[in-house]
Amino acid sequence: MSCGNHHDTPCDEVLARVYTYLDGELDQGGCGEVRRHLDECGPCLREYGLEEAVKKLVNKSCGCEPAPEDLRTKVLGRIEQICGEIKTTGSERAETETA
Image 1 (cartoon, rainbow, N blue to C red):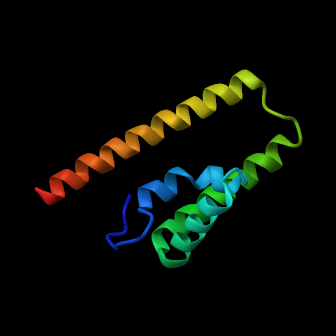
Image 2: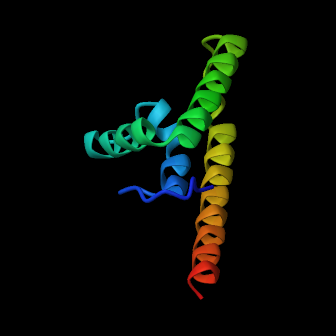
Image 3: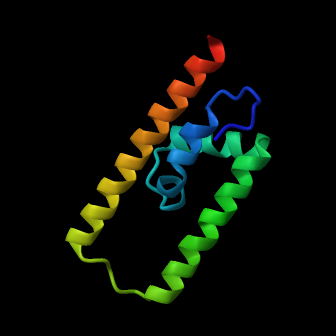
């Protein structure tokens, strides 16, 4: 996804890090990049708001029980796979647009 405007941190990169940002797992520099991008990009801010709402709903529904480690590993693996697919698709799209 891209809003079509130039940003120091591309939309696809920010959206790939939304859950890491929401979980407080980004370093200070990464948090600053995401915050600055969300401040200037309405489409990404809306997507962030949606992801934040989903996270809160899941947290409310699941209570305080931690996820089993094997489930956590599978979910994180799938997220990494999807992020890789998003980056590949974004790179291919950028190459097509510049050609």
